[in-house]
Image (cartoon, rainbow, N blue to C red; front, side, top):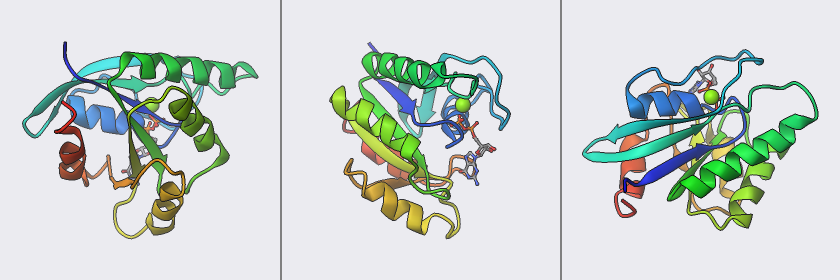
Length: 163
Ligand code: GDP
Ligand code: MG
């Protein structure tokens, strides 16, 4: 059985961008547009010498009605149950929003093994967001830029002992 990492977090934090970087094929859609039907997506990740299975929790961008919250929760819970560890991604640029707390609660309730990541942290844009992420109480956040490939060595160092 391959080690499975679920990438979780609210829409638009860069989960699919990171998934694509890890899987190396454009299996997951990446865009800013709501309304595209998506679901859980699984791929074979390569990170340096590490090989593992990665799950992208998509389907959360369907901002339609009151079912969003329930759908978000259900998909994330399913991903957490399938995974050995979760990479909880927040957006270092926007900082921690109330929606992030929803995911933090799910991870705490499920006693998931969590690696916290503050994405979009390229340059100096993410300094305050990084501090807010730290305040979530889920450990020290990794500083990532999925788009620019920054922080991948640090992510590998976090994952290596778990795999
Ligand atoms: P998801 O909804 O969490 O899957 O987020 P996406 O991967 O679809 O990304 C949402 C938006 O954030 C897209 O416009 C991405 O190009 C952008 N994005 C993703 N990663 C980064 C990053 O590291 N830095 C910056 N500046 N933008 C990013
Ligand atoms: Mg996505």
